[in-house]
Length: 337
Picture 1 (cartoon, rainbow, N blue to C red):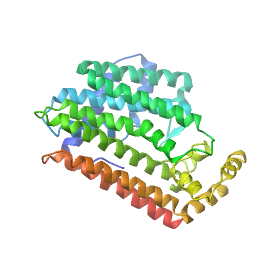
Picture 2: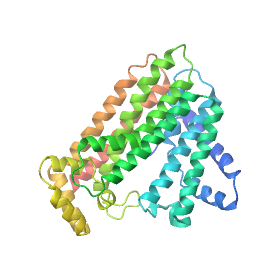
Picture 3: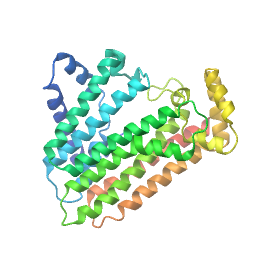
C-alpha cells in the first residue's frame, strides 16, 4: 500500500500533525546521541498506517481530538520500536532500502533505542488515562513478542502448518492493527454506538492485518532480484516458511527433506528461481493472494455492522481496493515468471 488516501486533506493534515508531534516529543528529549538515532528513524518514516487507523476508527463518532492524537502517536512508537527490535533479531542491515539502526549504531544501542521508544509510547498512553486502551496495547505487544518467539522456534523447520502460520501473522502484525482500530472506537463517544463499533473494528483490523502480512510474504517470491523494497528470498533463506511454500507442501510438490536440503546447501539465485517456478506452476502464489483477498472481504463485512454513513468508514472500506491493487500487481508479476 503506497499511501492511505493522501488525497484526503483531513488525513494528510493528521499525518503531518503526527510527524510534528513525534519530532517534538522525541527530539526534545535525550542527549545528542539519542537524537541522532531518532533523526535517522524519523527520516525513513513510512505510511503512518497505524495512526491513520486510530484516527479513522475514532472519528466515526464524536471524539476528543487530543486523546486520538496521543493514542495514534503511541501506536506509531510501538510500531517503530518493534521494527528496531525485529532488525536486530533478523540481523538486517537494510529495511526498505535504508540502513537500519543496528547497522549504524550496533545491536546494543538498537536494543536500548527500541526500549526507549516503547517507554515513550507508554508515557503517552498514560496521559490518556484509559486502563482499557492501555490494556489493548500492552496485550498487542505481548502477542507481537509471542508471535516472534513462535516464528523463531519454527525457523528452519519444514513441518510448519497453516495454523501456525496464521497464528504468527495474527500475533506479529494483525494484533497491533486490531488494537489501533478498537482503541479508536473506545475513544469515540456515540451514545453507546462506539461500544458496538469496537468489536466490529477490532475484527476489521485483525483481518486487514492478516491480508496485509500475506501480501507482504508473497513479495518474498515476486519482487525482482536486487529490489530495495524487500530482498527476494529473504524470508525463506532465513528459515521462515510462509503461506506460498506451505501451500506447495500441502500439494505434495515439495517435501520437508527437499526443503531442508535447500537450506543446507545455501540456496543460490538459480535454485530460488526454480522454487518460484514450482510455486507459480502449482498456482501457490495465486492461491495465497486469493486467501489475502478473502481476508479483505471479511474485514469489510465487519464494517457493514457499523450503522450510519461516515466518510471515515468510506476510507476504511477503500483500504480493500488499495490492497487489491497491490494483489493485482503481484499477480501480473507472477504471470511473467
